[in-house]
Length: 256
Image 1 (cartoon, helix red, strand yellow):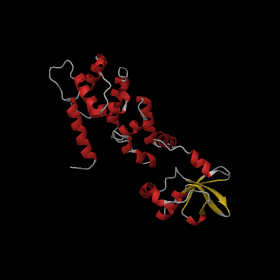
Image 2 (cartoon, rainbow, N blue to C red):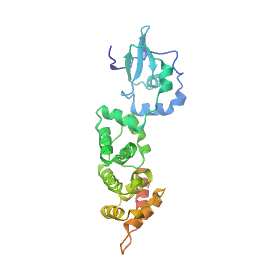
Image 3 (cartoon, rainbow, N blue to C red):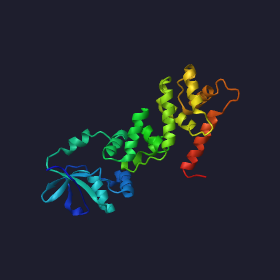
Image 4 (tube, one colour):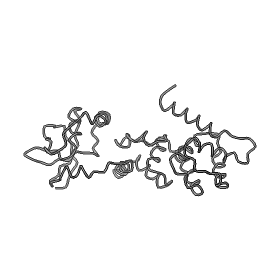
């Protein structure tokens, strides 16, 4: 029998297999909160096998227990073969940002497909691509949405701007696609009065000015020197970029 995704709210039809890990909901508060907010995500069904007239849960007992508490519809797949639950659980590799994005993209979710296409275009880390397209810097800000299938693309124009600048700079500066440098460029690209073409041109003309600084702020200071090279009137690139990011953080956090 080919496994088929099914669903039910008949909780009595399920039973836990005796060799499964004990159900400890106190240790799974994050899972409880996620399911309370997003429901039982059908792309992560429990696995069951028919035994003595019941559907014995081989994997997913915590999701089942939480679904019962929250009175959620349970998604499940019934299999016929025998599987070694302890062995499978001991060999499981935690899902990464890439894994979640690949999974939802394969399922046809346009938001996740957009992230993969952006990565292919600009060759940036997948988490960075997801963050930029969502209008933020760190993938940690959107990781929960990525996991639950609720991720949304919100700021394509800014992401394209950042991706384009980094792609052009990377030809002469090897560290252009490291996190702190990306963060610095992301903040610069928020400035409306900055000439990005000048920045790119000066970096290409004077690659010797590009040093392997560590923090975002030291990188901004370096880029300010590169940007102002040959100018009579100096532009305060670093402080303006820092202030722009501070204002944006206040806005995103809902503070006044």
